Structure formats: structure tokens, C-alpha cells
Length: 515
Image 1 (cartoon, rainbow, N blue to C red):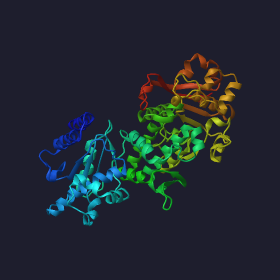
Image 2 (spheres, helix red, strand yellow; image 1 turned 90 degrees about the vertical axis):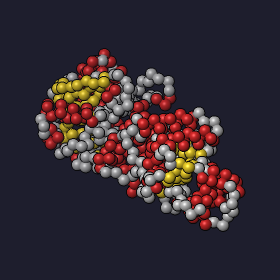
Image 3 (cartoon, rainbow, N blue to C red; image 1 turned 135 degrees about the vertical axis):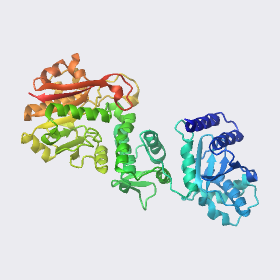
Image 4 (tube, rainbow, N blue to C red; image 1 turned 180 degrees about the horizontal axis):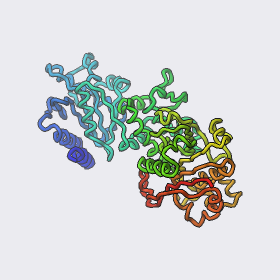
């Protein structure tokens, strides 16, 4: 709590700063809280911190755009002059340089500037005037690709302790990289989208103008490819501003790309990779998946669902049944479990990339497939089609999207119109099933019902709103569904148990056996 209060008090003080001295006082108070008595001000500098773990030159500005390369270079030239004075006195140089402003801050190794100490320039100029007197030096530093600081935004997500940790590692000559976790991943992704990706429609402008959900999905795929499979994503060796990701050329800000991935860890253990990838759903929920009604299923409910299936069909159900998750996302319902014959499919190719990159369910056949785009399974892998045709017992384990073509809101960013207009939706209307044909999850159930009528021996285990069991709009649907399936077991819990879902509507998990 004390560490959090240091950051909180710093942010509060910076928000009320009106002159540069206020900024200096705010930062120095934060540094003094952690390192009392270790800050001095030689040569009229804003501060020099020297203790057993961190040595750093401190420089503070008021409302300077630290994202601007020339502004960065200007303040670094000023810092260079302070380093020169240390050198002239025979003092050891500080290991790092910290630059703080009301809106941003950054720190870099002092070694980044050491070569400039040998330049034949007028070192007698006051550091405060050094950038004005050395415009050529400012321009040279601004263009130096080896000096590309990561800029921290001073906002509610700012963590001053993380900056101190970076300064400590610089002082100890250790590499520094922030570990991405479920707590910071959404904000880091937003920064990736804002700073790294050069164009809003970064692959095909026409495609993404027409399909915002696909744009976000592809952007998330790029982000996770860079994190979990960095060998699959790299800056083009000859073309500036291009990242090659899975063979695709993607326009980015090359400088910000390098800065971004110098700051965040890319080398993860398998257990860490799984935690990171599990949060891909959180990113997509915060963007387009919330518009289609797809939600990440918490592990506790996945485990309970597996137990319930075992109670109905035996502990060996994973060996005895062909299991198919036809709305798998990033395989949340099946990863971590071993199956004899498993098929996992999803509409989004990016999810299949993630599944394969992270090695989830390596025994599975994972494939991109629009489950609602055909009545049968003609476009499925041959082995899956053969399993149906041979009369094998098939168990569907799914958490389909809950979106509907009806939208009560007026915000275009949340508009769901059109998402339920699928081929199966058309079939349901022809079969006079009623208004429930607008619900995506009812379309998944209806197609599975059609498969059961054709192939028999199908089990359905599904997470879905319980409306299809009790709602009046599902009466015609139930008349058809209950002709082929018998209820075996179920549970009900609040939707707020799903990641970041605040709604209090209910979610059911039910198991249905063919008649």
C-alpha cells in the first residue's frame, strides 16, 4: 500500500503543478520517499540520485512534449552537459538519466550519451542553454536510433515503482523488461495499438473499413504473435515501417516498435504463456467480442463442466467420445486436458494461430471454420466428417457467442446489427422457429440439432443464457429441440462470474443427450 501511495501522491502533485519547480518538487518528493537523503543538486542541476542501488541524473520539465524526438534530444543535450561536468571533476558518471514532465517521463542509460562527451564543442555553455547553442547536436541525437526511450504516460495506469525498477537494473547493468500480466495486458495492448500500428487499417484499408471486428482481431493477433512467437514477427530488413508477421507485411512505426518491445518481456515460460494468452479474450471482449456477445469462460466453471460431464458419461468420456468445440476461441474449454480425438474450430484465424503458437491441445485438429455457414459439415476436415459418417459418439462442448441482431443501444461502437444474419439464421426462419432465430447461441444449438437428426449419437454440453429453456420466444425452438434431446444435468450462475462482465443476468451450463 505504501508503494502504491508513492505513485498516487506523485500523480496528484503533478496534476496540480503550474511551473517547472512544482514538477521538480513532485518528483523529488517521490524519489526522497524511496531514497531519503541520497539526492543532491550539484552544478545547479535538478538533482543527482546516488545510493547503493541507483545512480541517476534527474532533470524535470513543465509541459514539454517528451514524445517529440527533438524535445527529447534537447533535454538530453542539457543532461549531457551535466555529465560533462561530472567527468571534468573526475566523478563517476551516473548510470542512468531520468527525465520527468507533468504528462510523461522516461529514463535511459547514461552510456547512450557517453560518445558525445568526446565531441569538440563548447563545454563552457550553461547546461540550461546547451540545446539552443548546439542545434546540430540536438538533431544528431534526435536521429540516433540507439537512443529511443520508452515514454511512460502519467495517468491512472502509471507505476512509478516500475520506473524505479528499470533505473535499478540500468545501474546494475541488467536487462529490464516488464512482464505482461492479466492486470496490465489490456492497457499495454491499447498502447500497442496507439503507438506501434501506423495506420488504423493496418493491412487492408477496404476490408477493415467494412469490418471493424476483423481489424481488431487481426491487430490482437499481431500483438500476441510478437509476444508469444517473436520469431514469426520481425521488422523488415530492407523496408522501413514494415513488420513481417506470419508472412504478411504490416505497416508500423518502426521506432515505436523497437521501443515497445525493448520495454516488454517476450521470453515466457509455458505457464506464463498460457496466462498471457488466456487474456487475449479480455482484449477482444473490451473491443469487438463484446459486440458479438462472446465471453471468456473462467477456469473454475470449465473444471465444473468437465466434472458434470464425467458424472453423466463416465470418467473416460475424453477417450470414448469424439469431442468438438465448434466455438473454441483460444481453446479455453479444452486446453489443459487430454483428449483421444478432439476437434477445435473457430471463425477467427487469429485464434487458431494463438492455439498453435502456444501448443494448446497438440493432439487436436484445430481449424478455422464458420459453423453457422452451412447446414452440414462438408467444409470440415475429412477425419471429422468420417467420425460422423462412421457413427462415432460425438460430444459438443461449447460456449458459443450470445450476440443478437437486435440492439437496444444507440452507440455505433456497440452495434450488433447483422451479426446474427447467418445461413443457419435463414434456415431457422424458413422452418418458422420464431424470434429466437436472431440469437447466435440458438443457431449453434439448432445446427447441432440438425446434425443429430442426420447422424444420431450426439451429446450437447453448452454454456448459454437459460432463456432457450424457459423463454416464451423459444417455444417453437423447444418443440423441435426436445424431439431429439433429453436434459441430463445443468447448473446456473451469474454472468458476472465471466471475465469483466458486470451484468447480473444468468448463464447456464446444461448437458443434453440424444434420444
